[in-house]
Each structure stands twice: as structure tokens, then as C-alpha cells.
Image 1 (cartoon, helix red, strand yellow):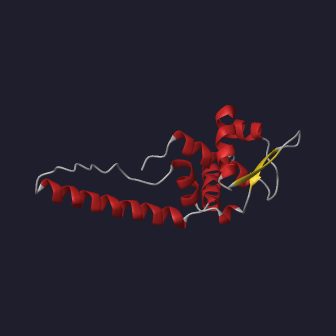
Image 2: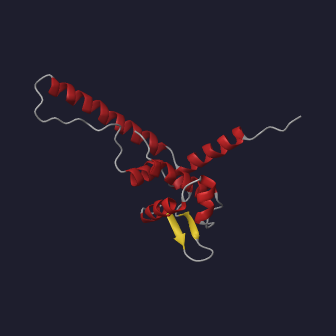
Image 3: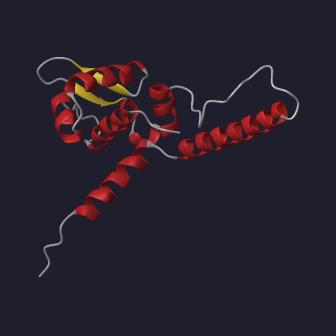
Length: 149
């Protein structure tokens, strides 16, 4: 499975909102600057996430976005499926007029690819946005310079 740029930006935007204090409205320009996402593209992504029920928006001068639920209540599988569509590790090759031997091999390949898809979904369903935020914090701490003398 390869995550598209749109999928990556959606997850990064949600991490920015997930790291904000619960209920805080985060202006879109702050998310754009922090996560280095072009503002126009971010607007489209956040509108899509809003229509999917992952974020809420507030208009006006004090406007912006916030998570619609806690980060612990947002499974990564749901987010990725909403943004990317149905997961597939690879496009299955379907050739209707395969000869015997080739047909069975193709069925075996498709069976394994289906198992791989189910394993990916099961793994993604174990993780939430909160897990992603925690890993982001850990990575930030690991990258922090050590000024001890």
C-alpha cells in the first residue's frame, strides 16, 4: 500500500489538530505553516475530513478546525479509508480468458493479495490518531538537541 500525498497531508493535519488542547480551534494557516502543507490543498483536505466527520470547523476571525472526537476515538483505518478509498496492496490482475494453469496461479495470487489487504486493515484498525500523535511527540523528543555539558 502506498499512501498518496493527499493521505499523508490529511494525517499530518490531523496530528496538528490532535496535538492541540481538546476543544481548541486551530487556524488553518497555523496547520499549513507547522506541517508545511500548501494552504489551498489543506483547505480541500480539511473540507473532505469535515464531510467525513473527523473534524469540525468554525467560521470567522477566530475560526479554524478541531477534531470532532478525541484522537483516541479516531482509528487510522477509518481516516485512511475515507481519504484514500478502499485499501488494496496491489491491483489484482483479472484476465477472463486465462488458460488452465495460468488461471489457477492468478487465483492463488489474488487470494494472497486479499489476505494481505485484510492484514493491513487489521493493523491499521489497531492504531488511532492518538497513537500517531504520541509517535510524533516521541520523534520530536528524539530529534531535540541535547545541551547537557
